[in-house]
Length: 166
Image (cartoon, rainbow, N blue to C red; front, side, top):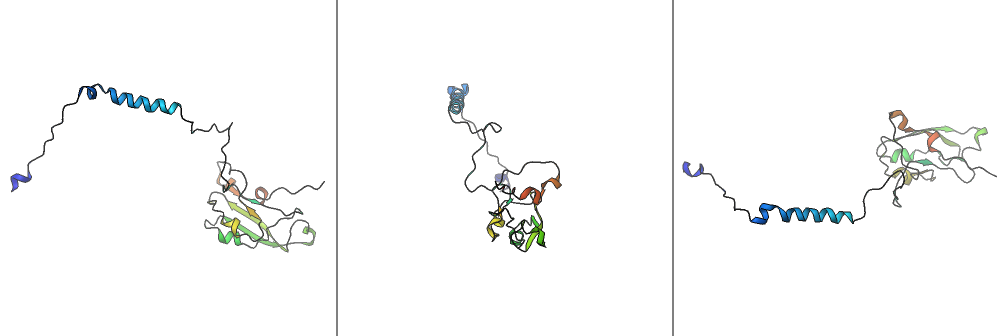
């Protein structure tokens, strides 16, 4: 029994035909594939000159919106921070002072509103959770940078510019 298990199988290759020895059919197939790609539309986009079209459900950078009177919509309820699965949103609430009546809609506002863009996964849950429709993910692409602290966006980068009344 031991002599049967020690036997090895030997595979004898079949001899190649003339066409296989010349590699001609394989070379012709490769050239045909290469030439067919010359006539197809290029998948490359020349980025600085041509910008890619985004889909309708694309999510860009966050922006805090203002109402028709130019007041901030955010009332610091904290629902956006609670709904964020990445815990990227930090906010501190403050009471509005009488002289700030033209800046904020409600008695309470977000004195500090920060989003850590390195943690954000752009899921859009903060946008859906906001009852005042104050936050939207409709801005541009988040720009690249070298320092971590530059990716923490405060109200100075997030709040849209106030409306100018003519």
